[in-house]
Length: 262
Image 1 (cartoon, rainbow, N blue to C red):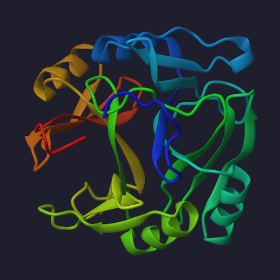
Image 2 (image 1 turned 180 degrees about the horizontal axis):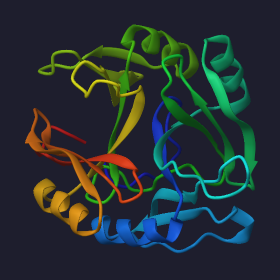
Image 3 (image 1 turned 180 degrees about the vertical axis):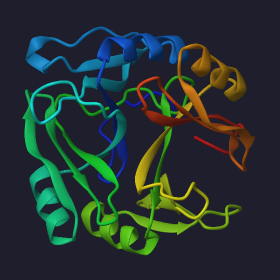
Image 4 (image 1 turned 90 degrees about the vertical axis):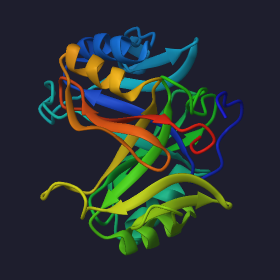
């Protein structure tokens, strides 16, 4: 699947965005790496920028703001899940041991959004679609293809997301210790523990973008001022790497083995 022409089923990752201290610097980096078309957002949108590929939205970039109103130092990618009712989901998050970071808020006529953390500390977002239902292109070069929860407690996380988003986990064939997250029997994301990651890594959601040539893109990331955190390697579904933009936003890139991913 590449083009998305209808709202995602509840529990499905539908959007990703980046909050970053220097929005314009991020524009330049992601144009170079993914070929996105990016323009600053309007005052009505709070400066939130929609990044497009082939004229269709694939991700967002916003300026990170600190509590005192100035630019924040933290840069992070966030995965948003489709929900039928943001406010009902927020209530369930609290009842299930999670924490609400940003309560339900209307985004003009586009939809309603909230952000939260699960009981293991991983941050994520909720999106209740109205006029805008999320990414219009996925699973092709320059668009997100996978979202992965790396968590200190997979069992606790599974119970939480099952209650909040109605999703289930099942062991991923050929990947010991890795789980597929499913909505109505369809795999939409992945989950694993932190045992294979560097000591001290916190729980987090990691966004994967498809690319045409992982090694080439990893080199492009470095040329554009970013860094490679995990060099390119082959796994069962493709060749991937974990990289970081110049402001610290971490994401993965993958060239799938056709017929195995997406």
